[in-house]
Length: 162
Image (cartoon, rainbow, N blue to C red; front, side, top):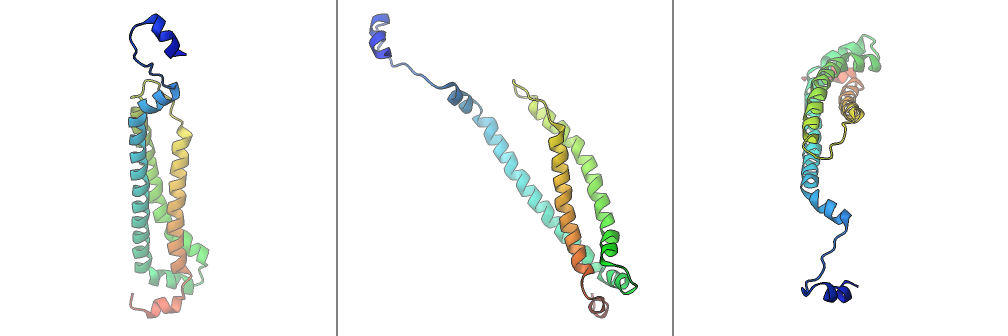
């Protein structure tokens, strides 16, 4: 239709460039979208590295305290009691790290969202859920390691040269 009308309106035979609004918005947000993908990739990588570090620390801790765990088991402590006793110190360090990191995350995310012209409000429940998920993953690693050490045969641990 434009080709038939443009001859009557103008002598310029230039074609009409038409784009969909959604394509224009998609193109305008390409930079922030790539930034968010990069942040997401580094976030997942940092979570994996931190869980591996936590696994290594728990392995070292349970290896160092295997005789203490065995002595507790010999004196009648249940596996559940041993896991609770030895996981408390890790739990407190995780709680302290969450208390420190949540306000920092809120501040950094708020500053990042202020850079957009169509600013959205920050949903605090997202940060709380993320903190709870990280605490859950950490506790799974910690309890798994201590449960593994607590379910070993206490005689084997007491006879060994750990």
